[in-house]
Image (tube, rainbow, N blue to C red; front, side, top):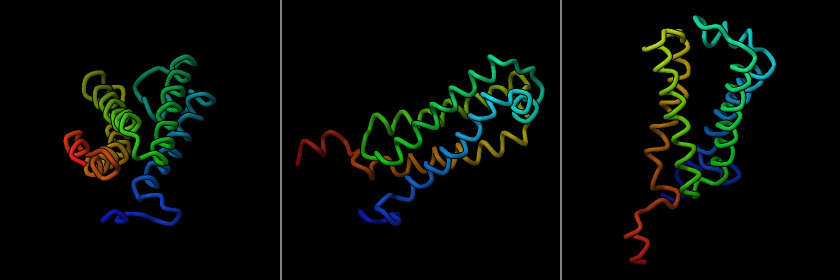
Length: 142
């Protein structure tokens, strides 16, 4: 069972998924820094985007991208795993609030981001104890 879900190079499937999501996040980072108008029209369709909004979005997305790549290669690091997991929860929560409360985020984008975020959240929850994240009691018994 220990080798289950592993691919070439001994990186588990979850690690490959996190690298793919990190690459998508990196692409969004680019638009935050260098193409705020496109970010505003594509992502926040009903909101005005200024340069500072775009750069703030870019920095947050770059940070979450970095978490994805670091976690992909360090799935056994519990604090890093938890921080990466929470980046998905916080990020998707932000977009849900923008859609439901402020009406600045289109439903079509919520579905695409939801696919990435919800898949990551569920997969990371299912794999939580598979990468050395067992309970402290089990560790003490060994």
